[in-house]
Every structure is written in structure tokens, then in C-alpha cells.
Image (cartoon, rainbow, N blue to C red):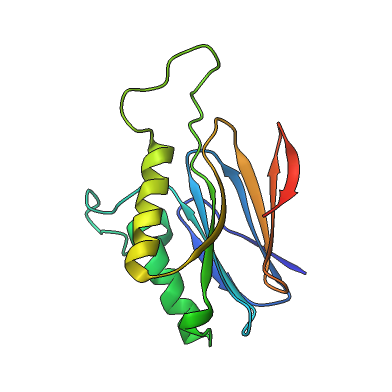
Length: 164
């Protein structure tokens, strides 16, 4: 398999034999899209909830923002032959990396919570069903996404690996 790393604020779309990988998701959010018939997979490493404060509004790197990552991934997948009606999503990450046991949490929503909320709103707006998620908590995650079968392996230092 060809390993395709999706760095912070990036997004990629591939088909087999590619394997999409996203490392070090803390408060960042991994947005994964899949369409089984075409075996097309898309993955964005979302850093921030929305592009409204950006001068370029996500134009340079749409994967950076939750409100621009989904439309960009959808557009690329459709251009490459995915069926819109067959696309579904999975979300990974959106943690609060500074939440410690025995200490109160922040009064305002954390960046991880804001990223998750914005991604869920974007999915609802685009009418893309969310199939599963592994989000929240106070630990980082890494993702391997296989377009051969749509399987996602989520790895954590604390809890090992699990399929999503």
C-alpha cells in the first residue's frame, strides 16, 4: 500500500492502493469520508472550527477548517467518480488535551469541542450521514484509513488500537 500522510490543515482523497494516515490528532479533528462503490476515501486534518477569521477563508488549505474541509473533500470525491448518495462520514479526535483528572474543565467550549460541533453542523448542512465517531476525551489519536474496505484503525497511547 502507498502511505499518504495527511498533515495538519491538509486534506487528501485516494483509492486503493493508497492508505490515508493522520498522526497526532489532539484537539484537531480527523474527518473521514468514504464511498464503497468507487472505493474512494477522503481525509482532512481539521485544525480550527471555521474560516470566518481567516483572510483567505480556507482558500489556501480547505482542510484547515471544519466549514471548508467537508465541501472540498466532497467536491474532489465527486470529481473522481464517487456517488453522492453513497458517501458517509466518520470523525476522530476533538480532544481536550488540557483536561486533567481532579481539576475542573474549562468554562468555555474547548477548541476540540468547537471543532467537533462545527464538523457536525457541516455534515448536517451537506446531508452527509455520520456512521461513527471516536471523539472527545483528553488523549491524542492517530488514524489509518484503508479505501480498499473503508476500515479505519484508531490508535491511542492510552487505550491501544481499535477499529472504527
